[in-house]
Length: 301
Image 1 (cartoon, rainbow, N blue to C red):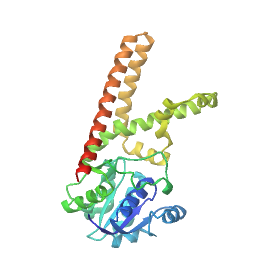
Image 2: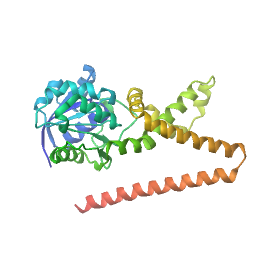
Image 3: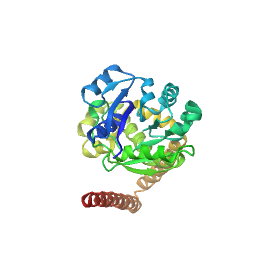
Image 4: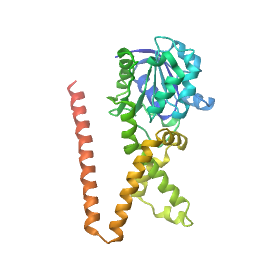
Protein backbone atom coordinates (compact mmCIF):
# COMPACT_ATOMS: atom_id res chain seq x y z
CA UNK A 1 0.00 0.00 0.00
CA UNK A 2 1.32 3.43 -0.93
CA UNK A 3 0.86 6.02 1.80
CA UNK A 4 0.27 9.60 0.66
CA UNK A 5 1.26 12.40 3.01
CA UNK A 6 -0.97 15.11 1.52
CA UNK A 7 -3.56 15.00 -1.26
CA UNK A 8 -5.26 18.15 -2.51
CA UNK A 9 -8.69 17.77 -4.11
CA UNK A 10 -10.21 20.54 -6.19
CA UNK A 11 -13.95 19.86 -6.08
CA UNK A 12 -15.17 17.94 -3.02
CA UNK A 13 -18.49 16.68 -4.36
CA UNK A 14 -19.41 13.19 -5.54
CA UNK A 15 -16.26 12.40 -7.53
CA UNK A 16 -13.59 14.23 -5.55
CA UNK A 17 -15.27 13.52 -2.23
CA UNK A 18 -15.55 9.80 -2.92
CA UNK A 19 -11.87 9.68 -3.94
CA UNK A 20 -10.89 11.34 -0.66
CA UNK A 21 -13.17 9.15 1.44
CA UNK A 22 -11.90 5.94 -0.16
CA UNK A 23 -8.27 6.81 0.55
CA UNK A 24 -9.03 8.01 4.07
CA UNK A 25 -11.07 4.90 4.91
CA UNK A 26 -8.27 2.74 3.56
CA UNK A 27 -5.65 4.51 5.68
CA UNK A 28 -3.79 5.52 2.53
CA UNK A 29 -3.45 9.25 3.17
CA UNK A 30 -2.42 11.33 6.17
CA UNK A 31 -4.12 14.58 5.15
CA UNK A 32 -6.65 15.66 2.51
CA UNK A 33 -7.03 19.35 1.70
CA UNK A 34 -10.10 20.53 -0.19
CA UNK A 35 -10.26 23.49 -2.55
CA UNK A 36 -13.40 24.84 -4.22
CA UNK A 37 -15.48 27.81 -5.23
CA UNK A 38 -17.97 27.73 -2.36
CA UNK A 39 -16.86 28.00 1.24
CA UNK A 40 -20.06 26.39 2.53
CA UNK A 41 -19.46 23.31 0.35
CA UNK A 42 -15.93 22.95 1.69
CA UNK A 43 -17.13 23.38 5.26
CA UNK A 44 -19.76 20.69 4.69
CA UNK A 45 -17.11 18.34 3.30
CA UNK A 46 -14.95 18.97 6.34
CA UNK A 47 -17.87 18.32 8.69
CA UNK A 48 -18.51 15.01 6.92
CA UNK A 49 -14.88 13.98 7.34
CA UNK A 50 -14.18 14.05 3.60
CA UNK A 51 -11.38 16.59 3.97
CA UNK A 52 -9.16 17.53 6.87
CA UNK A 53 -8.72 21.17 5.95
CA UNK A 54 -9.68 23.92 3.51
CA UNK A 55 -6.94 25.28 1.28
CA UNK A 56 -6.14 27.22 -1.87
CA UNK A 57 -4.06 26.79 -5.01
CA UNK A 58 -0.96 27.33 -2.90
CA UNK A 59 -1.78 24.13 -0.96
CA UNK A 60 -0.39 22.01 -3.81
CA UNK A 61 3.16 23.13 -2.90
CA UNK A 62 3.47 20.38 -0.30
CA UNK A 63 1.19 17.79 -1.91
CA UNK A 64 2.08 14.33 -3.16
CA UNK A 65 -0.96 14.18 -5.42
CA UNK A 66 -3.54 16.66 -6.72
CA UNK A 67 -6.93 15.67 -8.13
CA UNK A 68 -8.97 18.09 -10.23
CA UNK A 69 -12.60 16.99 -9.82
CA UNK A 70 -14.25 20.13 -11.19
CA UNK A 71 -16.19 20.70 -14.46
CA UNK A 72 -13.86 20.27 -17.44
CA UNK A 73 -14.28 23.89 -18.56
CA UNK A 74 -12.45 24.96 -15.38
CA UNK A 75 -9.39 22.79 -16.04
CA UNK A 76 -7.14 25.38 -17.67
CA UNK A 77 -7.93 28.04 -15.06
CA UNK A 78 -7.25 25.66 -12.19
CA UNK A 79 -4.00 24.46 -13.70
CA UNK A 80 -2.83 28.03 -14.28
CA UNK A 81 -3.64 28.80 -10.64
CA UNK A 82 -1.54 25.91 -9.33
CA UNK A 83 1.29 25.96 -11.88
CA UNK A 84 3.38 28.52 -9.98
CA UNK A 85 3.09 26.45 -6.77
CA UNK A 86 3.72 23.06 -8.38
CA UNK A 87 6.86 21.37 -7.06
CA UNK A 88 8.81 18.64 -8.92
CA UNK A 89 7.59 15.82 -6.65
CA UNK A 90 3.88 16.58 -7.06
CA UNK A 91 1.70 14.72 -9.55
CA UNK A 92 -1.57 16.18 -10.84
CA UNK A 93 -4.45 14.23 -12.35
CA UNK A 94 -8.06 14.96 -13.20
CA UNK A 95 -11.43 13.22 -13.30
CA UNK A 96 -12.88 14.88 -16.39
CA UNK A 97 -15.21 13.02 -18.74
CA UNK A 98 -13.40 14.36 -21.81
CA UNK A 99 -9.70 14.15 -22.41
CA UNK A 100 -8.53 15.81 -25.66
CA UNK A 101 -9.65 19.27 -24.46
CA UNK A 102 -8.16 18.62 -21.02
CA UNK A 103 -4.79 17.75 -22.57
CA UNK A 104 -4.81 20.95 -24.63
CA UNK A 105 -5.72 22.96 -21.53
CA UNK A 106 -2.94 21.31 -19.53
CA UNK A 107 -0.33 22.00 -22.19
CA UNK A 108 -1.37 25.65 -22.34
CA UNK A 109 -1.41 26.08 -18.56
CA UNK A 110 1.55 24.01 -17.40
CA UNK A 111 4.13 24.49 -20.14
CA UNK A 112 7.29 22.58 -19.26
CA UNK A 113 5.57 21.07 -16.19
CA UNK A 114 3.19 19.07 -18.42
CA UNK A 115 4.98 15.84 -17.50
CA UNK A 116 3.53 16.14 -13.99
CA UNK A 117 -0.05 15.96 -15.30
CA UNK A 118 -1.61 12.53 -15.93
CA UNK A 119 -5.13 12.79 -17.45
CA UNK A 120 -7.69 10.40 -15.98
CA UNK A 121 -11.39 9.57 -15.94
CA UNK A 122 -13.12 7.43 -13.29
CA UNK A 123 -16.09 5.60 -14.81
CA UNK A 124 -18.40 5.86 -11.85
CA UNK A 125 -21.07 8.20 -10.64
CA UNK A 126 -24.56 8.85 -9.35
CA UNK A 127 -27.16 11.43 -10.24
CA UNK A 128 -26.69 13.09 -6.84
CA UNK A 129 -24.20 15.91 -6.41
CA UNK A 130 -22.26 17.58 -3.62
CA UNK A 131 -20.33 16.30 -0.59
CA UNK A 132 -23.36 14.50 0.83
CA UNK A 133 -23.40 12.26 -2.27
CA UNK A 134 -19.81 11.06 -1.73
CA UNK A 135 -19.31 7.36 -0.94
CA UNK A 136 -16.13 5.58 0.23
CA UNK A 137 -16.90 2.58 -2.00
CA UNK A 138 -18.01 4.45 -5.14
CA UNK A 139 -15.00 3.20 -7.12
CA UNK A 140 -14.98 -0.42 -5.96
CA UNK A 141 -14.71 -2.58 -9.08
CA UNK A 142 -15.15 0.43 -11.37
CA UNK A 143 -12.90 1.35 -14.29
CA UNK A 144 -10.59 4.34 -14.29
CA UNK A 145 -9.15 5.29 -17.67
CA UNK A 146 -5.72 6.91 -17.75
CA UNK A 147 -4.68 8.66 -20.96
CA UNK A 148 -1.01 9.14 -20.22
CA UNK A 149 1.06 11.64 -22.21
CA UNK A 150 4.44 11.04 -23.89
CA UNK A 151 5.99 13.43 -21.35
CA UNK A 152 4.76 11.47 -18.32
CA UNK A 153 7.42 9.57 -16.38
CA UNK A 154 6.45 6.00 -15.60
CA UNK A 155 6.62 6.55 -11.83
CA UNK A 156 4.19 9.49 -12.08
CA UNK A 157 1.66 7.39 -13.96
CA UNK A 158 2.17 4.59 -11.44
CA UNK A 159 1.50 6.96 -8.53
CA UNK A 160 -1.89 7.95 -10.01
CA UNK A 161 -2.75 4.34 -10.86
CA UNK A 162 -1.95 3.18 -7.33
CA UNK A 163 -4.12 5.90 -5.80
CA UNK A 164 -7.12 4.78 -7.86
CA UNK A 165 -6.39 1.11 -7.22
CA UNK A 166 -6.41 1.84 -3.49
CA UNK A 167 -9.92 3.23 -4.05
CA UNK A 168 -10.84 -0.20 -5.44
CA UNK A 169 -10.74 0.79 -9.11
CA UNK A 170 -9.47 -1.13 -12.12
CA UNK A 171 -7.05 0.78 -14.36
CA UNK A 172 -7.51 0.95 -18.13
CA UNK A 173 -5.38 2.87 -20.62
CA UNK A 174 -6.44 4.69 -23.79
CA UNK A 175 -5.22 7.63 -25.80
CA UNK A 176 -7.15 10.86 -25.32
CA UNK A 177 -8.63 10.52 -28.81
CA UNK A 178 -9.70 6.92 -28.24
CA UNK A 179 -11.27 7.89 -24.94
CA UNK A 180 -13.36 10.71 -26.38
CA UNK A 181 -14.64 8.62 -29.30
CA UNK A 182 -15.67 5.77 -27.00
CA UNK A 183 -17.41 7.91 -24.39
CA UNK A 184 -19.24 10.03 -26.93
CA UNK A 185 -21.08 6.82 -27.87
CA UNK A 186 -21.66 5.15 -24.51
CA UNK A 187 -21.87 8.05 -22.07
CA UNK A 188 -22.24 11.49 -23.60
CA UNK A 189 -24.95 10.54 -26.12
CA UNK A 190 -27.10 8.73 -23.50
CA UNK A 191 -26.97 11.80 -21.27
CA UNK A 192 -27.99 14.04 -24.14
CA UNK A 193 -30.92 11.74 -24.96
CA UNK A 194 -32.09 11.55 -21.35
CA UNK A 195 -32.02 15.32 -20.94
CA UNK A 196 -33.81 15.77 -24.27
CA UNK A 197 -36.64 13.37 -23.39
CA UNK A 198 -37.31 14.87 -19.96
CA UNK A 199 -37.15 18.41 -21.35
CA UNK A 200 -39.57 17.47 -24.14
CA UNK A 201 -42.11 15.94 -21.75
CA UNK A 202 -41.75 18.82 -19.25
CA UNK A 203 -42.49 21.41 -21.97
CA UNK A 204 -45.84 19.88 -22.96
CA UNK A 205 -49.16 21.30 -21.82
CA UNK A 206 -50.09 17.97 -20.24
CA UNK A 207 -46.69 17.40 -18.62
CA UNK A 208 -48.12 16.90 -15.15
CA UNK A 209 -50.43 14.17 -16.38
CA UNK A 210 -47.66 12.45 -18.34
CA UNK A 211 -45.27 12.44 -15.39
CA UNK A 212 -48.09 11.08 -13.21
CA UNK A 213 -48.13 7.87 -15.24
CA UNK A 214 -44.39 7.59 -15.94
CA UNK A 215 -43.14 4.38 -14.33
CA UNK A 216 -39.95 2.36 -13.99
CA UNK A 217 -39.07 2.31 -17.69
CA UNK A 218 -39.15 6.11 -17.92
CA UNK A 219 -37.35 6.42 -14.57
CA UNK A 220 -34.55 4.05 -15.60
CA UNK A 221 -34.08 5.66 -19.01
CA UNK A 222 -33.99 9.19 -17.63
CA UNK A 223 -32.11 8.62 -14.36
CA UNK A 224 -28.98 10.33 -15.65
CA UNK A 225 -30.95 13.50 -16.45
CA UNK A 226 -30.67 14.16 -12.71
CA UNK A 227 -26.94 14.81 -13.12
CA UNK A 228 -25.31 18.24 -12.93
CA UNK A 229 -26.41 20.43 -15.89
CA UNK A 230 -23.24 22.54 -15.59
CA UNK A 231 -20.99 19.50 -15.78
CA UNK A 232 -22.81 17.99 -18.75
CA UNK A 233 -22.95 21.31 -20.59
CA UNK A 234 -19.16 21.43 -20.37
CA UNK A 235 -18.76 17.79 -21.39
CA UNK A 236 -21.08 18.18 -24.39
CA UNK A 237 -19.22 21.23 -25.68
CA UNK A 238 -15.79 19.81 -24.96
CA UNK A 239 -16.50 16.64 -26.97
CA UNK A 240 -18.65 18.37 -29.58
CA UNK A 241 -17.22 16.79 -32.80
CA UNK A 242 -17.46 13.20 -31.53
CA UNK A 243 -20.86 13.81 -29.93
CA UNK A 244 -22.25 15.35 -33.12
CA UNK A 245 -21.08 12.32 -35.08
CA UNK A 246 -22.78 9.96 -32.62
CA UNK A 247 -25.95 12.06 -32.65
CA UNK A 248 -26.07 11.91 -36.45
CA UNK A 249 -25.68 8.12 -36.36
CA UNK A 250 -28.42 7.80 -33.75
CA UNK A 251 -30.71 10.14 -35.71
CA UNK A 252 -30.29 7.88 -38.73
CA UNK A 253 -31.21 4.87 -36.59
CA UNK A 254 -34.33 6.66 -35.35
CA UNK A 255 -35.28 7.49 -38.94
CA UNK A 256 -34.88 3.81 -39.84
CA UNK A 257 -37.08 2.78 -36.89
CA UNK A 258 -39.67 5.36 -37.88
CA UNK A 259 -39.76 4.01 -41.43
CA UNK A 260 -40.33 0.46 -40.15
CA UNK A 261 -43.09 1.69 -37.85
CA UNK A 262 -44.75 3.77 -40.57
CA UNK A 263 -44.73 0.74 -42.87
CA UNK A 264 -46.24 -1.48 -40.14
CA UNK A 265 -43.15 -3.65 -40.56
CA UNK A 266 -43.42 -5.80 -37.46
CA UNK A 267 -40.74 -8.22 -38.62
CA UNK A 268 -38.30 -5.37 -39.20
CA UNK A 269 -38.98 -3.86 -35.78
CA UNK A 270 -38.62 -7.22 -34.06
CA UNK A 271 -35.32 -7.84 -35.82
CA UNK A 272 -33.91 -4.54 -34.50
CA UNK A 273 -35.30 -5.18 -31.02
CA UNK A 274 -33.90 -8.71 -31.03
CA UNK A 275 -30.41 -7.59 -31.99
CA UNK A 276 -30.50 -4.96 -29.26
CA UNK A 277 -31.73 -7.45 -26.67
CA UNK A 278 -29.00 -9.97 -27.55
CA UNK A 279 -26.28 -7.30 -27.44
CA UNK A 280 -27.46 -6.03 -24.06
CA UNK A 281 -27.66 -9.53 -22.59
CA UNK A 282 -24.12 -10.28 -23.80
CA UNK A 283 -22.89 -7.01 -22.31
CA UNK A 284 -24.52 -7.74 -18.92
CA UNK A 285 -23.13 -11.29 -18.94
CA UNK A 286 -19.63 -9.95 -19.58
CA UNK A 287 -19.96 -7.48 -16.69
CA UNK A 288 -21.19 -10.20 -14.33
CA UNK A 289 -18.40 -12.55 -15.38
CA UNK A 290 -15.77 -9.85 -14.77
CA UNK A 291 -17.26 -9.07 -11.35
CA UNK A 292 -17.28 -12.75 -10.40
CA UNK A 293 -13.68 -13.19 -11.54
CA UNK A 294 -12.67 -10.19 -9.43
CA UNK A 295 -14.56 -11.56 -6.41
CA UNK A 296 -12.87 -14.97 -6.86
CA UNK A 297 -9.45 -13.31 -7.11
CA UNK A 298 -10.04 -11.28 -3.95
CA UNK A 299 -11.32 -14.35 -2.15
CA UNK A 300 -8.15 -16.19 -3.12
CA UNK A 301 -6.05 -13.42 -1.67
